[in-house]
Length: 123
Image 1 (cartoon, rainbow, N blue to C red):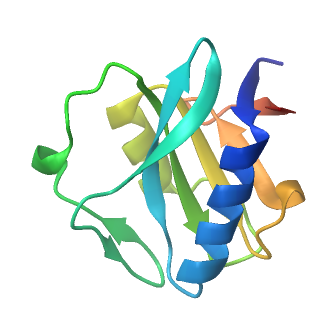
Image 2 (cartoon, rainbow, N blue to C red; image 1 turned 45 degrees about the horizontal axis):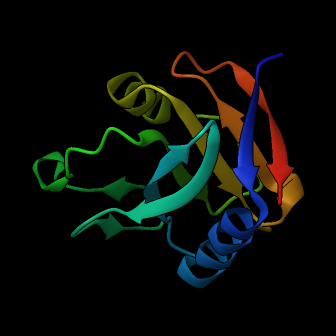
């Protein structure tokens, strides 16, 4: 199984954001440096609702370091929905879904095709 690496500090920050946005969903884009996800870009002018996240793609900066996305599910399921898979196909890279109760054990990573990827948390 393919594996991604994410900084511990970023993982904790994403979990904190998920808890703060609950019961609404949260979404962002992940920046990668030297093979490790290190930062999140919050979706500009996004709508963070109870069942979805919407944003204007024209507001996204051109950023070669963006290699993935992250969003939350306010339910215990981290499985990608059809809408998630459609979104994944538009943005490529790796996609994190953080499900309730927003702990490290409730985070899953997927390819653009929806195949699960292992997560390694690094310091």
